[in-house]
Image 1 (tube, rainbow, N blue to C red):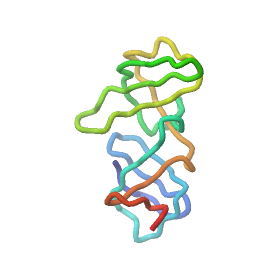
Image 2 (image 1 turned 90 degrees about the vertical axis):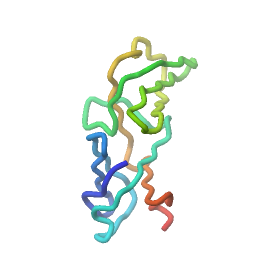
Image 3 (image 1 turned 90 degrees about the horizontal axis):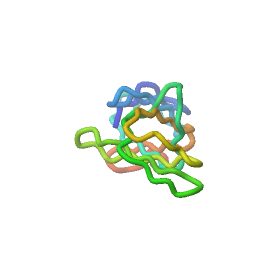
Length: 118
């Protein structure tokens, strides 16, 4: 969850977890300050050393051959975060991992409705 802090073709969202997101969903000046939920599919998350959308402790991993699923420790009542990274990624359990996503892969929702389809 977060708040729209900059509007336009690529709005910027300040996330409650301290991260920041830029989405490729056009917004208007009226959307400034709007509370939104952020959605990203597990396969669209990528590890980053740059500005993260999310940083958390990997609770456990599941190696599936061509991909590794990372399950992050829940933060309070927040939804479970799962990332699907390509390849085998050993040694990540109990480590902090930062994730980001391409702005075109980030979905924004307000009151349960996608901002893309309003």
